[in-house]
Image (cartoon, rainbow, N blue to C red; front, top):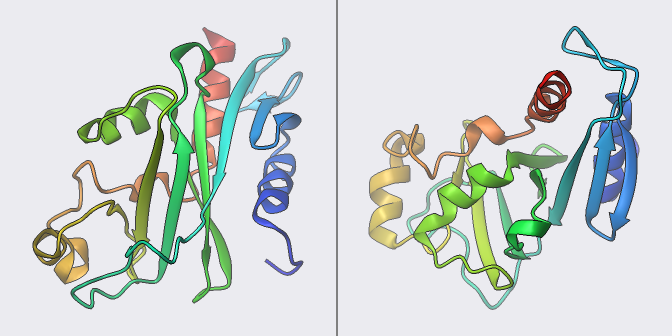
Length: 191
């Protein structure tokens, strides 16, 4: 990473380096566009925008969020956020957390609807707060481990998460997936 950034500064710097114009709507809410630029070989002439809700990890010392079975974990992200109302939902959620073992800031980037679908196992009511926990394993796989039991941890995550790979708790495809933002912007520009 070189320069020391806060998570939010690194997010903004990364988005700008990809050519996004950024408008900050509130402390943790952004609007992006790439007007008159190339996105995935599409020439964009009008201003198409997408919204991002940014959430930074905060580990609460009162809650047990690490392994109970000595599962090797590279980094943990613990996120508290308010479920947005349907008329105030962002296009994307962008979560950030420290990966101190690699001296990186990691980002989980996924569409609002995909996150809500995956978290539907919890009671999701707009306006209510939810806590979500992610573990980044040494093999680079990322899993949602909110309220995981000792038995489920052993079953799903032992052996580098082999049993959890490809399930709804596997978020590996969303780890540092900046391309998904460009794809969404390009698809909204061509539709």
